[in-house]
Amino acid sequence: MSSMIDPANIVPKYYQLANILRERILNGEFSAGDVIPSERQLEEQYNLSRPTIRQAIDLLERQGYLYRVHGKGTFVSPPKLQKGMLELTSFSEDMRSRGLEPGQRILEFGYVVPSPKIAHQLGLNAADARVLRIKRLRTGNDEPIGLQDSFLALEDNQSITREEIENKGSIYAMLEQKYGIYPTEADETLEVTLATPEEADMLQVPVGSPLLLNERTLWSQDRKAIEFVTILYRGDRYKYFARLTRKW
Amino acid sequence: MSSMIDPANIVPKYYQLANILRERILNGEFSAGDVIPSERQLEEQYNLSRPTIRQAIDLLERQGYLYRVHGKGTFVSPPKLQKGMLELTSFSEDMRSRGLEPGQRILEFGYVVPSPKIAHQLGLNAADARVLRIKRLRTGNDEPIGLQDSFLALEDNQSITREEIENKGSIYAMLEQKYGIYPTEADETLEVTLATPEEADMLQVPVGSPLLLNERTLWSQDRKAIEFVTILYRGDRYKYFARLTRKW
DNA sequence: TAAAATGACTGGTAAAGACCACTTAACATC
DNA sequence: GATGTTAAGTGGTCTTTACCAGTCATTTTA
Image (tube, each protein chain N blue to C red):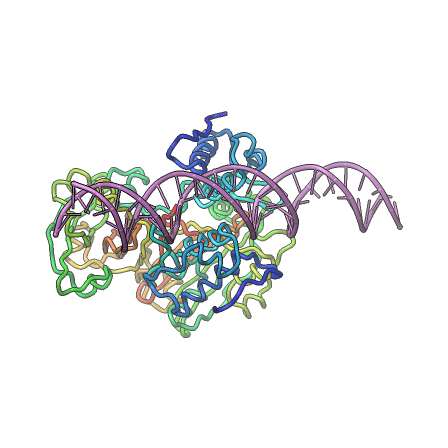
């Protein structure tokens, strides 16, 4: 037995159980395609009621670790489908997952009055709003990859400094640490554009080269718009990836 | 009261309740930001136990219609975030959601031995496998939009005819009706390419025009790979859209 | 021998009751 | 008047119990 449930722990039992089971999967005790113990067996093993067991399995099913087959059992998902559904990756996370070292050069930093389009995307009144604009050249292994133009809707009591951006790199990691807000939902579009002279210069490609334009609006867990960001990727160096799901 | 629970119905009660509540939201009875009746109130209104009520609300929460706040209540999500997570849209659904009438011209149809890359994507042994290849020119309002090349991994007892494709249009709708399999998960990549002479001819664009290449592997609810498909979109006519989430 | 029924497993749905944790507003106190 | 306190409301967790609905190997039956 890898571990047991601690009734005194503040962490809910179903959550503790989910963690234990996830461990047992990741440790290789259960591997892809294996049946895990039935709900009745887990009930005995961990001394929990079946609803609690089911709650834990529900969680792991939504996270992509397990899937159930009525009448047969609960099985471990193939590794392809693990790693948590879909990741709202920041540029930094994205680069690292591709084995590249993320870097950046800050081109603009400061508060601006948002354009009507951006105000609309962020659900703000253009009139009295001000948003933090951060424009950066993003690199992977020191090669230019994308031009990122970010517009952040911060609350009055929230702030981000240029230094923090320079040190941390990831805005999301910072918002999470400082204010406990993190992205939970995003609308994203991708389309093809051709490099303007200015863009071509920054990205070090010929004028008119095909680029991948990614626009994204991000919402936090309390349903407030956090950010509207556009990223212009070099067409020859970047491939967008997403994992889609529909499991209701 | 819009409707009541039918205990005799084969549809689970929690599912019936979720449908009723979704109706009440979409009808405008509850609007964005409103509190819906508390779980105890719903318990009385619909004569159900609280676990059942919670199961229904869980479902609507995952679908993005509601969100809960501990100690305060359950609220209707802003319309932006409704419409269910992320939709694995077929080309047909995709076009219709953009207000365009989907059309197609079948270019190739038949069983082929998959290339190593495609066999790998579908988790097959290239040697003894055969997959159904369907290559189509897809149109919106009769204008060419994309070149779709689809490779389907069908079971021995499953088949799709050219006529069915011509009449139905959507492969997914057909697989669901005939065999009860439907896509639940997909890996998707997008990148920029330039039109080859052949592609340019089909899509009616100049040779070398920028195109958006979308590659997708689809899995069914039982985690079997269903399809690997590439779609080459005209860069000037198509914008990819996705809604991303991370709500565990 | 082959088909049909059985039974023992699996997960799926549902009820009723209890207590905890968070939020809010009304109330009592200083 | 400002400040704590309390109580009632909310969703969050958990147990116990029951029965339904698929799956599959075994047994019975034709």
